[in-house]
Image 1 (tube, rainbow, N blue to C red):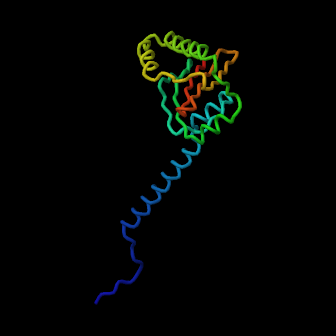
Image 2 (image 1 turned 90 degrees about the horizontal axis):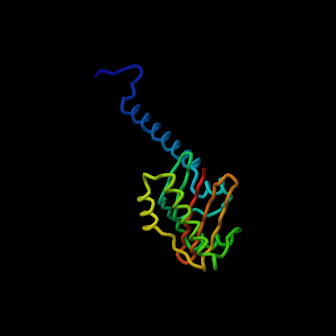
Image 3 (image 1 turned 45 degrees about the horizontal axis):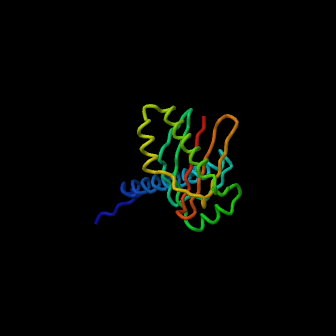
Length: 170
């Protein structure tokens, strides 16, 4: 019987398995760190406007233009608990008899978008028709306007637990 004396060689499969496990662990670490650094829409509103909202359960970006003439129309849906927290925060104004004024601000936003993006004029109009903000005098709003022309219109419908945000940054 032949006896082998000396160091035994580990199998290649073990090394490959260790390398793959290390690569997988590194990918997981990278994804976790990236997720921690990711800014949510609520973070961006807080940073840009001081507008504090909880994280929505669902966020629909209806219109978004980035770049120099940043503009977006977003619909955010919230849980009942998040809605209560949001309404408890400062800055909300009851719409009451101001619903026409809010409607006029929104129409001006649409007109501005269509002027800035004439190639998308019809698409913009259709998106607002399909995703029209639903509000009445029982709702709430926040309007923020900066000296440089940037503004944010946020309309909250507590019954639908929905927030409509129109934002323009030039």
